[in-house]
Length: 153
Length: 399
Image 1 (spheres, chains in turn yellow, orange):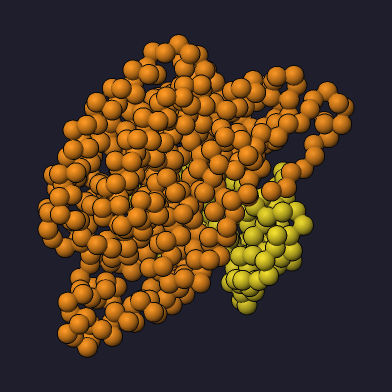
Image 2 (cartoon, chains in turn purple, cyan):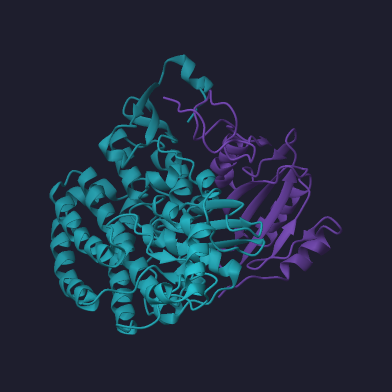
C-alpha cells in the first residue's frame, strides 16, 4: 500500500517546463533531471510540495555509458507519506551540486558517493572520504574496480 | 575516515580528545573526535569506517538469494528486519505474491527481533548510565528470543530466514508453545526491569533535557524511527505504508514530544510492549501447518521429495542454486520500519540473476549524523548518553 502522489509530476512539469523526463518505475513517481536544474527543483519539492525528508542519496555507476554516474535521491513527505525519486546524471570529470544546503542530512551520503564512486560535489561543507582511509587509491564501487585484490594490512 | 582540521583549533583555547574507537560505551568501533573547552563539548564529530566491509560491492557479485546473507550482517542485532526490507524489495520488482501465512511469520519475527534489539539497547544504555545489573537481565531474556530464531533458522545470529518468495523453512513442531511461553513470561520481565530504572532519580537526571533533537532538526538530518518519534512526529512505516500484512494488526505508534534522551528512552520502552502485542496477534493468525513459500517454481526451490523422483525438479533445484533466478530490469526501493528507523533497499536490476546496484539505506548511518547537534555545549559525560540514546549499530553505519 502506498500514498504516492503521481500528480506531483504534472505540477513540477508546469513549474519547470521541458526539463523533467519521466522514468517508468514500479514503485514510486520517478523523474530524471539535468544536474544544472536540480537545486531549483529540490527547493520547489521541499518548500512548495513539502517533501521534507531526504531519505537516501544513492549513486549508480553506468560504466561504460556516458555520462557515467547517476545520482538517485529518495524523497519523502512526512505527513502525506508520499515518495518521490529524483535522478540526475553526472560525468566522471564533472561536479554535482550538493544538496546539503536544502537537506543537511545529505552530507554523509554525498561523502559516501565521493568516497566510493569518486563523484565530486560543489558546495559540500566537508568533502572528504568517509569510510576509507585518506590515502586509499581508487573508488571501490565503480564497476571497473576489481572485487578482490591484494590484501592490505 | 578522514577529518578536516578546523581553523579555530589553532588558538590553543580548546583541546581535541578521541573517544573510541576502542571504548566500551561507543557500542562498537565508533570514534568520536571531541573538541573540548574544559568539560564542555564545543564540537563532536563521529569518525566512522572502522567496520567498513564493502557489503554493497560484495552484493553485486552474488545472486539475489545469496545477497540475503549480507543483509543479516548490516544491523546484526535485528537481522530479520533487514531480511524483510530486502526480500520485499526484490519481490516488488518481480511482482511476486507471498502466501499470507509466510507474511504473518515474517511479521512475528520482525517484531521478535525488534524486541531483542530493544532489549540489548535497554541493557547497554542503562549500563552506560551506571546501572550494571539490568544488562545481565536483558541479555538473559534476549537469549529466549535467540532460541526461537535458532529453532526456525538453525543459527542464532545472521539467520537469513526470510527468502525471496517466502521463508527458508517451515516452523518446527512446538513452535507456538515456545512463543506462548515467551508471551506469558514477558510482563514479569518488564516489571523486573522497570523496578530498576523507573522513577530512579539517578537515571532520570542523566536523561532529562540531555541531547535534545527538535523535530525540525530531526527532519533536516533524515532521522527516522524511534529518534524521530521521540521528537514528536508519529512516523511509522508499519502504520503509514503497511507492508507484509501489517495493516491487519492492532498496535499504536509511540511518541513523545520532548526530543531529549528521556523521550527517546521511553519511546523505545513503550515500543517493546507494542511489539509484544503484535507478536501475540500474529501467533493467533499463524496456522501450525500451511504454505511458507511461494508456489512459483521460478523462484522457490522444489520440495525435497520431488528432487529425488523427478528429473525436472532436480534440474530446477540445480539451476536455482547455481545460477539463481533472473529479476526483471528496473529499479525499486522498499523501506521497512526497523528498530532504528527506516531500513530500506534500493535495487537496480539489469535483468540478470545478480543485482546491478545494491544499495542499503541504513538508519543508523543517518541518525549518527546528528551527533554534533546532540552533544553541542553539553558535558563530556553526556556524550555517552547521546550515543546510547540514538541507539546506533556500527554494522549498520559502516556497511
